[in-house]
Amino acid sequence: MDNVSNNMDRRKFIKLVGAGAAFAALSGCGSKEGSSAMQGREPTGKMTYRVDPKNGNHLSLLGYGCMRYPRLPKSQDLATENNLDQEAINRSIDYAIEHGVNYFDTSPLYCKGFSEKATGIALSRHPRNKYFIATKMSNRNQHSSREASLAMYKRSFEDLKTDYIDYYLVHNVGTFEALKERYIDNGIMDFLLKERESGRIRSLGWSFHGDGEFFDYMALKYPWDFVMIQLNYFDWDMTFDAKRTNVSAKHQYDLLTENNIPIVIMEPLLGGRLAKPHYKARAAMTQLNPDASAASWAFRFAGSFPNVLTVLSGMTFMEHLRDNLNTYSPLVPLNENERDMLVKVSQVMLEYRNINCTECQYCMPCPYGLDIPEIIAHYNRCLNEGNFPDDRQSEDYKRARRAFLVGLDRKVDSLRQANRCTSCRKCVPNCPQNINIPQEMQRIDRFVENLKTDIV
Image (cartoon, rainbow, N blue to C red):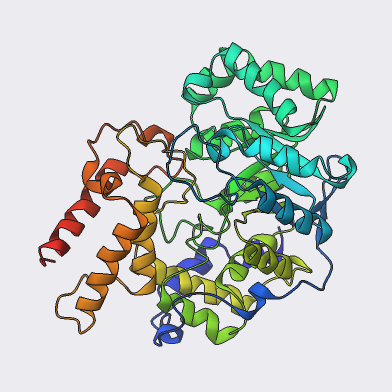
């Protein structure tokens, strides 16, 4: 293993967590926005590439995640409405390719089912040898039958305007039950292995959210060309957040590396949470480098591991793309002092704990109309930015209370807020972060109602 892994082992984390001076660098109050001068700067360096040992492909370390495409203004929020801003998508993808990005990751389920089509339109305007396409067999729920799965597979080729897929994934499989239902009983796993033999799939992989016992089984059960895992500095080691999952990113990285399986990284920002961490955590980052964005620290952490082929980022706005390009053009790996700082940042984030939502939208649409991701996002934003009215004795209570309530009404229509939750639990099996969504909706609803009656 490399120096990063050796320096970040469990004993190191435990030692640092127990250190009495861990918060010394966090006593000040830094920027609440987490922005930086680098976000608007045109990238001038050359992209860092990693060589895929399975096929010799040179992949850009920055991968373009196609889950969070820009959208047009809309008057409705219909589950079937395609409101993607194709012109903005084209501009962003053109800019990414111009600056060295060549890996584009999508799924039949992203952006209410329209991501593949939008990606195909944008990429097909460029020579096919200029980019690698990654998409998935996202055959959950009503799509799990053999017929529906095969139709999904065929449609991916049509929407992406291609006759082969460079990197194809068995999507979001984390339990033995899901593997059996979605891939074994219907014969889809055998089908995909044969498609790889035919060359229509160039590399076959698997994306994981789930149980540690299943990960160990699945990682070695099939001859994977690559595996996609969630890896970031907050849950690299389970010292910080052992309740969220029973398998650490460190264990996943080590097992795959020991078995010569290359890795693609998802959620390096935990759905954006690490781009705007709690303002006390942000102060530690600013102390080391006031010009670096919070996001850049997370991307440098993920990119510093040598067995990582590419790190995905869902870049809605051009400033996100520019910031990430600057981070990886070229990558400057983290040093030990910087890694230690991220340990302290993780401690602060755990103390000011928010909800582990990555805004993946898998819980949507809610049958009762709730905007679940935005409800949670508003709660997390207010906590991170210091607009969290949890202490009536605080001098800032009235301002924070108003900011929370007014902001919630602006972001989420009153008919889509947490009080509309019926605890039907249809969203719970779809959450890759294992969030008890109805429980969180009830908790947020109680908090909001107490604020409205001025009781905290």
